Amino acid sequence: MDEFKAYNLDFFPENILIDVLSYLSVKELVRAGRVCKRWKRLVKDQRLWRTVDLTSWKGVTSRILWVLLRQYLGCGLRSLRLRGLLLSARGGTFLSEPWLKALSTKCPRLSKLYLLHSDLRSLPSCQILPPSLRVLELCSCELPREFFRQSLPTSPAHPHDQGEATSSASHQGKAKKGKGVGSSAGISIEKLVLNNVPSFTDQHLQSLTSWQSLSRLELRDTFRVTANGLRSCAAKDDLSGVEGLSRLKFLEIGITGRQGYQLQMASLGLGAGWIGLEELSLGGKEVGPGLLCASRLKDLKHLCLWACTLSELQIVRSCRMLRGLRRLEFLDVIFQPRQSPPVEEGQGGGDEQEDKEEGADADVNDENRTQEGNDPFQSLQRSLAVLLPSCSLVFTNCTVQINPD
Image (cartoon, rainbow, N blue to C red):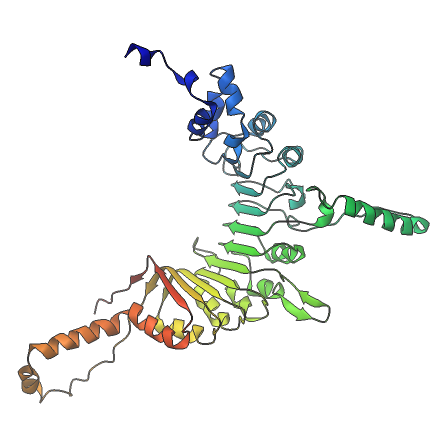
């Protein structure tokens, strides 16, 4: 036993120590780096800083962000989650332009950024964010009006030097094509998630049409987006080509939040255009109006309905025209039971004695038929199997509403 007491963590290989340290939070990692020089060196290993989550660390200020960026964050960073001071009594500027520029330089492989409770009104545009971003998630944030607008830099030139400037610009563009930095290529974000962002309006949505790489857009509890705004951004065929959100493949619209907001029914804007849209997700109060227009989406292959109450008749009517649908998913959906036709009081009065003489087997068969008729899952599967034979149905955490009668 004395031999085992002589061993401590210093005898472990560094790879094992890094695996142990990977289970610590960012705040605990910083504290672990103060133990000794060896641990300080191990804590700075970039394998520990691929995914950084600062949303659970309360009291993070801009000063702490600068310390983390200068001492720990580096080329190994892939995903970053930050929590701002929007709901904090302390207030102040959380994300500044110098810090974001330094983040772009020191972390060239950052591809995912998640911002929670952040006030972004001090930033001129989202182009100040790292150009390597592919996924941007904003939750409960405040946005300026021109945040998503994309502006390409223009260099002034004299009229007689315009030809030379054009040729030199083309050569510089070819030379910098392989580099990750350079706003001339535009915003490279492929997935944009907006969750409970009341300041997001139709003007922001219109600005997204200039994004050439945007393929996934998720709008959750964006109360100010209207049907006209969504309709104006739809991908449509024009004389000059396809305009609007032409590269969009996935769209999610859901309203499940607060009371008191006027329902805009933005999903009514799905009835026009939307060429190339393959996946649609509707949730909450947007399911009803969205199903009315989903039948006009010719390229739709995957439809997801979540957090709503539906009936079999409503689903069958909406999906009748979606011949290309391959997957229909229901998530947290409450199904209404099928309404059985009422029985008149005058019918069957004289045949009561004959019904009793048929035996218990007939009663059991009638009960089974009644249960199958009231079961919306089996009935819906049979109805959709006829209309959409190549479509697969997925039910996740769905329930059936029981009538008190």
